[in-house]
Structures are given as structure tokens and as C-alpha cells.
Length: 230
Image (tube, rainbow, N blue to C red):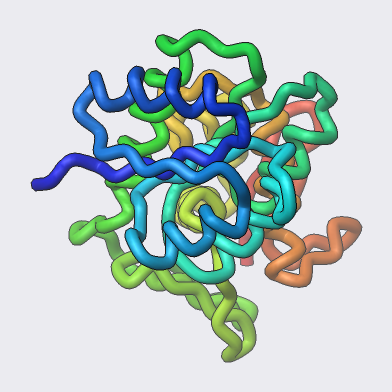
């Protein structure tokens, strides 16, 4: 198996060089781009496994680039941000980013997050999986990783699909946020439980959920979430 390909997008030459040195040392194939439009062209041509991108890019911003990448291809995304405001992190997660790193960051931390995200992404193919429930117009095919609602196919990111599969696999069971983090993101994920809330909200929006009268995913106050029983 060839080494994973990582595309790094940042307009700071020092950051590009630091990330290149760190990840090439760990055996990754590195691609670099200094702005969003160049990155989009490189991604379309090279089909990287992971994109590390800065939020504050010239021209096409990091958030816009993340949205464009998610619309066109299936890959992992780590956002870099110099800001510490929660809104930046939430915005990236809502667009489908798998993780985020706040500048300044240590090379060791970045390498650990890259390894963790790629490990989770490598589980996309699950030949032992069984089809999920057909209920209330929802069909989840775990083997082909596809979801339909009322006959219309719903596009979910890898993480969103894993959340829905985990919850729907045992209707009525309450999963805490920490349990979902461990099951979907893995024990080596360095984020916090608010990440779960962001992705749950995204899944609900795609399933056209009314949170006041949940059709599928119910909130258990103070605990977490469950898939509604029939």
C-alpha cells in the first residue's frame, strides 16, 4: 500500500515548511499550496487522502475551500486556525472538517492528529457491516455507506455516517457524548464533547429533523443522544 498523500494549504511559507518536514519524516507524501484556488486544482488532480488547510487563506478562504472539497470528493480535512474563538472551530466542523488545530501548534501534536484522522478514515470500508434499519422512510446501507430518506439519497460525511450508524444500530439505547467520541472518533481524538453536538446537529439538518419532535435522533438532556424506538 502506498503512503498516504497529504495536501497542506497555507499562505505562510514557514508553516508549509514546518508541516512538510514533520509529515515527510513520518513517511507521508506531501503536496503544498499557498492559496485556496491552487489547492482546489491540486486536490482535483491528485486526490489526496487528507487536506490540512488554514482558515485565513487569500482568495478562496479555508472555510469556502472545505465546503468545495466536501462537495466534490471524499477525503479527510484538518483545519488550522490562528484564532481561539469557538465560532471558528464550530464553523469548520459544520462544514465537515474532521479535526482542527489552533496555531501556534507543536509538530508532535499535528503529527498525532494527522495519524488519528487517517486511521479513522481508513475504516471507511467495512466489509463485515450489515445493513441498518429501514424505518420511517430511512434506509441505511452500512456496506455501501449510503443513506436514503423518503426515497432521496442523503449525502453524509464519513463522521456523520458513523454517528448515524452507531445510534441507529441500537434504537432506544442512550449514548453519552463521551461514548460517541470513543466509538466514532477513537480514543486518540484530542477534541472535546462539543464536537459531537456539532455533528449531530449537522446530521439532523440533513435528515430534516424537527428537534422539538424528533423523528430519529432524540436528545437525552444531561447525558447524550439516542435513536428513537419505533
